[in-house]
Image (cartoon, rainbow, N blue to C red; front, side):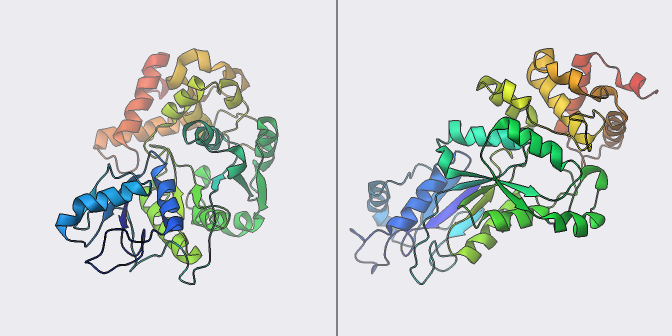
Length: 359
């Protein structure tokens, strides 16, 4: 996500245009921007209406307060996903009340994606465990007990938030019951989580977002960040650290960081009781990603599946849809990159898709 930050009135006190030598810094706002810059997936640039001849002095000032100017300092407002200036969203409430929040809230189910996200924050972003809040939302869904059991094995501290009304009242209006899509669910999660931390992770993964998921894409994250920042009066970032990663890449990172055994304690299955039914969309996507990440070596969990996931009825249904998309050259529902990865996986497995589908 690209952030464009105004200087005068945001990072320092507004001074007359003839006196930009040493304006008083706004320390709290500067710390917020440093937090944004600490995320390698963020690009932070600065802009100002100061005269051009003050460029060197402006850059020197920003660097003197500990800000990284390598992405650019501009005199014309550049394109960005998110703007912060003194005429738009204040970094702190106008009343001057302090908002001291340096926490990361992860929407944590006990599934593979959120498990990897927790360890990624520790290892790559140098978060301390006490600064990470794992929030678990109990929607009363049918596979909730499996997730509870998985979280117990993982041993990661978490806060449980009961929201069964969402499942009872909204699941009947789900757009796609086979994929458990509940309209607006992640907006509710984001709103609640934003009350706990300045950064909220709702895990979205490249190629894994259903085309009917309107609340797990970059546009949603930008809009939710804007709304939560306005409501709270402090910069609040709703994001996924893995929007440019495939699930295969996530698993590769996890294995390379010694988390292979931990992955075995995660669940990715819609079935009520079976740990891995092998015949739902989650099982199929997990099996493909695990195989692509490490082949048979990382698929020792295959024995846990009730049905061989690569030849299940759900797998056949997805493969038919993928073949149809290729035949029509229509990748509006499923991306070409995702389809190519799946077909490559089946070639590696030695499974003839046409024969599997009886064609």
